[in-house]
Image (cartoon, rainbow, N blue to C red; front, side, top):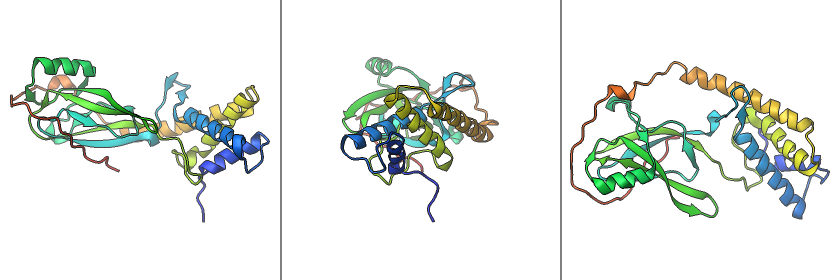
Length: 255
């Protein structure tokens, strides 16, 4: 018994049939319908919440991560699917549950040029450090002051999934997101190929907002009663140690 998910090939086949290209597109037709699905997937993944007018991040693109911070190491690579931080990195609850303050990576470099003291990390910055032609830009998290001992940081980040390639792949979102994904793909086909806003454009908009409302209810049930102490309640202590190398150790993301 199969599940109700639509595979990558299911989506581009439905787009192909909608455009009158048949159920087995080849050549330039296949390239076209795959490009339309990629655009529809992007439209689906990065929606605007009509109730707020702001971009909305679905719960299924949020990834929890733990990073072990080692003494005298201030650069830590982030995963290849890293999009951006959802919350600021903070230490585990038993260590004070403090959130680091974000500053520009250039500021961290300037601060290190003035002092290489080690202590309790207070600041972090996100810096691009390499580019891959397939995946894109990889990022590092820089912290300051560099740690005087080992700490565990945790945070949530938004995943930027890769473009699907295999016909049997499922797109991110799960069963309840299938109709929204499909309508987003058909909406792109509608506007791109027919140069008109039609029924699928409206259906996509409605399906996205319905999915957002459902997702908000789920995340509110989980996060609505949580509170985090204000940073002003904490005092900071630093211990000076000698400078050391910048080797890197990062724990695997927690699944």
